[in-house]
Figure (cartoon, helix red, strand yellow):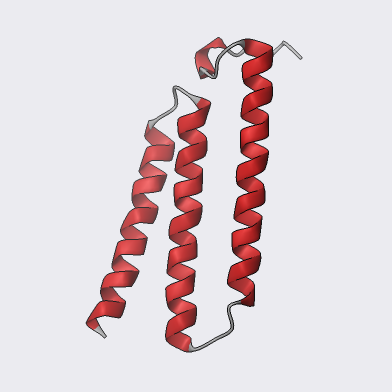
Length: 99
């Protein structure tokens, strides 16, 4: 029982660390995307520990992990597109009027 509580606590602390990194680091797009992936992985870890504790099926977890991988691929493709059009991934160099 204590190991289960530690697993829940570690996953929740990692989630809040990811949210803190997402809020505080706003200089580069890559660091923002990495913090989003860290949040997704901590949510996956929490959900998998809950499902294992309850004895349920892992099909929803596989669906969630697939969506997280697709979200990561989409974020990286947007990052490549922005770097090709603007030259870097600094938020301060983006012009909102430019297409």
